[in-house]
Image 1 (cartoon, helix red, strand yellow):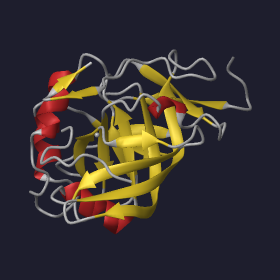
Image 2 (tube, rainbow, N blue to C red):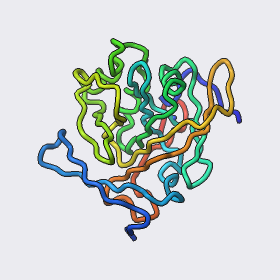
Image 3 (cartoon, one colour):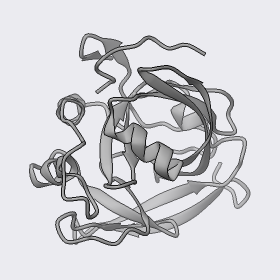
Length: 227
């Protein structure tokens, strides 16, 4: 399977059967309680990624890192998808090391945050927990991050948190997925393409009707432009 090569990846009826409500306490907004829906139906996990929205790709390896990506394509609604990452990206090494990650949909209206995230290199840091890129993005208010713990998210202090366990994700989203890399399906000197599988899918309450994701994401058009 071939994808175009670039030096800059974009930077790519509630029921007990299909959903499970999970309350998430946000320490970013002390007075608010955000309720999430965990998609349980195996046949619906992929629907949120169907339009190939631009996503924040969050990974761990030597250091936790964030990049933006739109080079992925859904294979089926069960949550299998293919994803291409350039080998010059720090994230590519993280995916090889850990074989998993999280993808959070960039909200419509957050195009500038997406650009600010995508234009920075992730290969800098102290090697403890998070790359310098993540720390800078959080400090400047471009993104906020939280750890996924049994379906709940809690704020992470990226300057102090040096614990290697526990998934984390960009919190500024209407939906995110946790995935595993099943295998490499294509590779050359410049990029690697994985077949991935969604393991868990979470959507903010109010934008999931039991079958469809109703949030608004952005789609990369090329040349740094989105629709």
